Length: 391
Image (cartoon, rainbow, N blue to C red; front, side, top):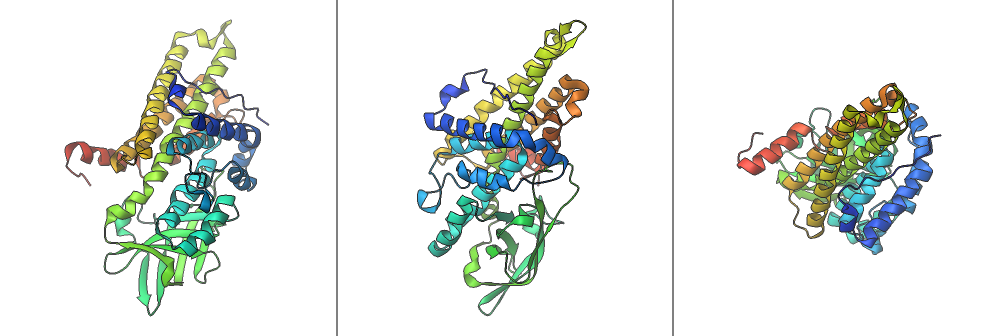
């Protein structure tokens, strides 16, 4: 089992920008990851397994819906604290951040925003305790970057909605108890629905043999003449933007989470370079190794400031869709470059499970397309600065 001796890089004293609550939540999450995740995660990923005990562990540190009111199982933390929690969970493994952020920023947030009071009380407390697992569906087998063209359809028949179609690449799909998902009718209206696992016509499947996100349960939501009551329709709109804005909190979580990966890779490479002897000297004394480490800490520092500033904007409610998009793209791109440099510093050892770097690299390959591809986020920023859409 690998011992986790992670030391957080902070070259620009960013910690001084954080509140006592921010640091407390970071320490609680970091300690839980060090004790419960790091010693076993490599074996779990090698065996393509999701350690179910992580669900209760994350709930015990308040990792499900922590920004929601206490009435619904939350702790009413601010969104910088939430971002820091995502940073620490994804440093442990992407599967942890995926589990927490889908449950929190998509399933619970959408139920909180759009469900009836009765539905909130029925679902949010069990979800916050980890007694229920939630899943969120937007992407489909043939439509990911263009959700407006989704093929999953809902039709009204009497006082029921009949739904047919499927959602693919869905986190927690194989183990979910409840799912929130988008579909479309023949009037180009998008409907957000809530469904329980036991509903007739609802099935799930698991995607196997993934190279990335191997510690995460990923699969498909399948709807075959599934009938839902009227109250299962949480929200309906013709505005694609209304549908897409539900992704904001998830993309925000990825921006912080990818930073956590970069910090872990940098710390691992720095420690290794300070211990590895070649040609009678520590390799940290070589100019080219120092150049790589300097590039890594510089880009990490930029991203620490970027996501902190985005957190400030999120807290005061002024963060835009474009700003969140930029942070997601930038953070994932930065982390990918840092991880590759870390792997090169570790040499052959970098591809072994003795170190976390290759696992992070494979997860980052998924993050490049997860919650919006790198290309789509590039064009979102391009549209923002030019006023011209290239879509």
